[in-house]
Length: 155
Image (cartoon, rainbow, N blue to C red; front, side, top):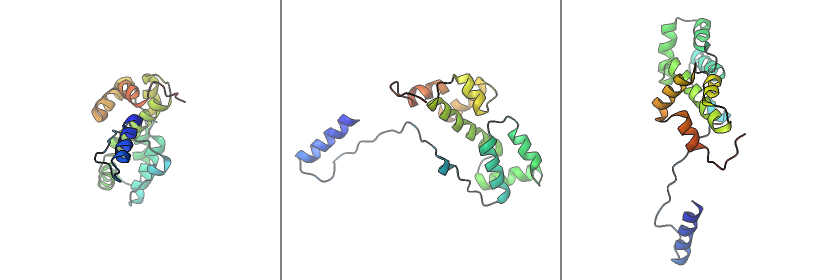
């Protein structure tokens, strides 16, 4: 990428142009979520509470059951309000948060895929692989191989 940028800069300098004639498009490897991006935007206080619960407890296999029993409304009312507020079902949101955690673990640790599945809240490696393929169209191992360059030292 550095060579391509230098080549483009050289073209601009030698041809005395302020704007490049072509653009260099770089496909992002991944988007790194920060705590500030985890803000819950639901206007409904009940759904705000539910999403916050899912964000903090998604790796607990019983988080949805705990959430449903702690709410002051029926499960069907909760699921309807949740979908209206977020565009996702509670289960879809929980899986999304688990996948985000799995991605984080794959990039930042050397944990085996089985351990990533366990720590991110999937029951086993097969469940992680199925969810990963469905959303990202690749296995967790393929994602790690692509997202973490060989020279990068993981923490």
